Amino acid sequence: MSLPAVAPEVVAEAVAALPGRLRSKLDQTVERVSGWTVTATADGAVVTVDDQVTVTLTAPVDAADRVVCTCLLAPRCLHRTAVLAAAPVLDPAGEPPPAVEEELPALAAAGSPGEQVTPDGDQERPVTTAELRAVELTEGAVAGVLAHGLPGAGAVLQADLLRAVHQARAAGLPRLAAAGTRIVEQLRAARRPAPDFRLAELADDLREALLVCHLLRSGQGNPVAVRGVARRGYHGVGELRLYGLCVEPLRTRTGHVGAVTYLVDQRGTVWSVAQARPGDPGAARNPANAPVDLGEVRLSLRELSRAGILAADASASVDRRLGHGRAVRAVRTDGRGWWAEPVAGLWREPPADQAGRWLSARERAVHERPAGHDLAFLDGVIGGDRRGLLLHKPSRSGPVLVLAPQDDPVLPYVANLRALVDHAAGRPVRLIGRFYGPRRVHGLAIAADWLPHRYEGHVDLGVDRLQRADLPAAEPAGAAPPEPARPPLHLLTHHLRRVVAAGRTALIPDPDRDLRALLDAQLPTAAGALAALRRAGQGRERDAFGRLAHGDPAALASAWLTAACYVEAAGALATAEAWR
Image (cartoon, rainbow, N blue to C red; front, side, top):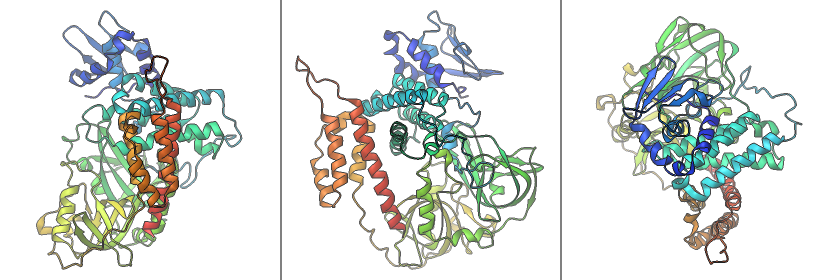
């Protein structure tokens, strides 16, 4: 049983009210919350600390009086505060938590496909005092994360971030609030044994938050894009004739397990139907078999990925997630294979244009990115070397490296890719993947004329498990060409992520060797950004007694943001060139 979601301001107020002697013990107490018994009730949950102490949460936990502890120190007690600090963040829109929202393929549209509703007057509206207050709180909290790193980003610093999230929501800055929420979820995942924590994703979220703050302060950029568009409910999109593409399992750091099915309409627009619920990833071995209702049609997400649907008066959210349930009017029709129209049209778009679509969408907020923005539709011949599965393209361009989206042993991604390399090398294949970098994709599904008919057209690499009898004998294949040299941007990326992980102490070793390597590679801007980051991290003066004074967190955050934005822009250019 998981804890009910808690509003960010409730957590921030509880941590602020905690006495100093108890605040120093908060992180250790939060680590023990996972061992306390959580019992579901009709209106929330009860957490049993021991024989005498319980914490009762009444959902929705959007006020301080909806969390009650039975100990003598309540409400300024460790038990109550630790439970609040361990609970997921409440989404005011009543939709899935942001961590689930970001992992469902985001597809921004409002009203009609491809359009985005712009609040009237946002183009001219100046930055308000409330927005500047949210910017100040966010900048201070993020600067603290960069100064102290993961070891210092405990419950107290997370409460500062949640206070900034609350202020951003109140000021009408959904993009900044979403970034702050993701940072908190990532920090919590990093401080507990969560295998789905990704340091690169945390660094991206920190860059996003600081960049939005900088744009709001300076007045640069499109005001609507900087402020962001809040997630809305479902809107009517008319009649849709849809055909399944593939299904992908979901595992989120908030403990949600589910799957998402991609579909395409007659115009080649990608939609999705998703379902995610709290649960143990190890227990839910195949969430794609969970049933979903589309009007009178009831079928699993895996079946939906191979079927056709005719929906009248269909509804979808801003990211083109289709509404489902008994209120939808829909009937099941025959599906279409990947070589039949309109599905086949997705593979006619050149890979360079597909990569450009993905890179352009990365400039938008996570929940505003268009549907299927990162999906790659590729044809080629299976190959392999020490790097893994390679997809050799018929053109002169080099091979595409196909990686597993998740290495969870419960999911068959890794086993399927190994089987294809060992027993299907040299065979033609059609692939749906997710762009991951320069000539790199995460493999989601494949189709080929040599696959058995029992797979009904294609194999979902994260759901179906290939058997040796399903694969033909490998054919001789030529050696893969060596991977072309890329700009050594990883040298600067390495230092940026080290700062996120360890704080300013990561910059104590002098990075002169990496500076010289960047200059030798004709990347003077990258070298300058690294030098500025080093000065900001090492620039600490001594007080009158010879003790090292605290460095300026704002200067470190500014230098880190400059370097991170350079890496993002230069990496996008290098990636686009690689896909050409």
